[in-house]
Length: 206
Image 1 (cartoon, one colour):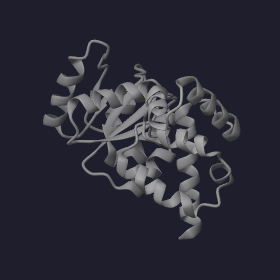
Image 2 (tube, rainbow, N blue to C red; image 1 turned 180 degrees about the vertical axis):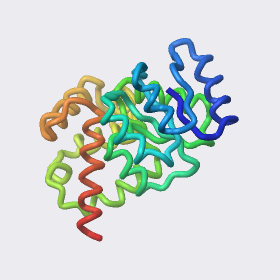
Image 3 (cartoon, helix red, strand yellow; image 1 turned 180 degrees about the horizontal axis):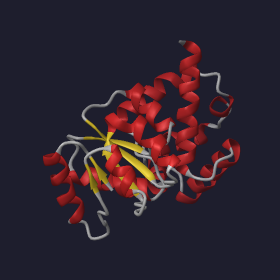
Image 4 (cartoon, rainbow, N blue to C red; image 1 turned 120 degrees about the horizontal axis):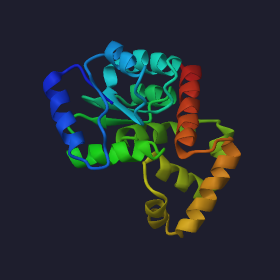
């Protein structure tokens, strides 16, 4: 489902999405009201929407029983706002100026259950991690921290393995250790719990 208030932008995106063989665009909406009405008889895997309305859209869509993924399009990245949105269920944020190939990649990543996190957001989190008293992060082994950073970067297991100089099976085993320690089952849940914890610590410091 595509949700964006600007018709020209929305039409261009719809044409792009329709050209992908493995994508099916089930609805085009200009506002949250239209999207929520469409959700009464359509259940898209991913809702691609304007970042500016995430607070209204997420809560109402969840109340309506939607269990799919949310991928936001932002004009610019405000790391703090992105962290807040990610911790409330947005699976990723892409920039309106990103390339079509990058957008398609983000949609596929989010649909597969992974998170799509911009480098500015990753740096925002990295700057805060050393100041945390977060037991779950601070007690992680060096390899676990490296794998976690790769996940926050939206990398696949193979790419994480290449980055840290380990085998893909080692990355999978380390990922399972992270799941066990945090009590989650998926990569996206792991990202959200780390982002949610960051928001809690941010509020405590303010």
